[in-house]
Image (tube, rainbow over all chains, first blue to last red; front, side):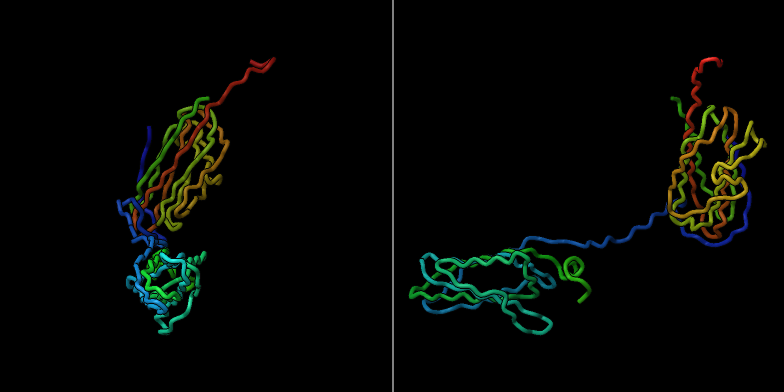
Length: 156
Length: 126
């Protein structure tokens, strides 16, 4: 049992709409983190005593946190891997890592190294045999926008 | 332990007030009151919950706020008040909502839980 009475009151201000009018406001959500797996594999033919340079271009406006890189050979010979990252702001190639090993070179960057735009590998064959050297790289890929939101402090 | 709820949900048009009375269904005490102020009320919607002893027009005592002449005006919150406010069957709850917002209607909900009085036998008393 309820009694109900309505009457006028003097307004004192203006508030905001609520769901009394079945109005719902939605905003486009800001996805703060998105990531996907990055991997690259290719076989590089390196002549005896020579070296080969490969430039690997990433998807535009994407960033790859490079974690693992490796090369191997089918002979127990000395091979080397040199990795450089490109800075699109300065146009400078900066060395990330350089390593040599017999039959294989494994590089692990536990914190990941951010690659913008492209990176470059140089594979050196120190043996007297021509070699087909498989190169593998793995990392985490995200967009530049999400990278700056999630990883980097501040805006570029 | 018996409980009863008394619920109010009122959509008040802009620059309007509403007064609603509901009868108390049980003798006991008001244990909880939840009030919902939706986002947008901006402190412009005044809410009073008053107890009327014995029926409409009876002695008024403020439940929330305890001063029957003042009111609560909040925004985007649902406070839950723990009370021990004694009431009797046939008393009335009187809810007054004044929407002083000049631009928007607002919907206020007030839910009360009333717990029944429990008579405990005591030696020497009936």
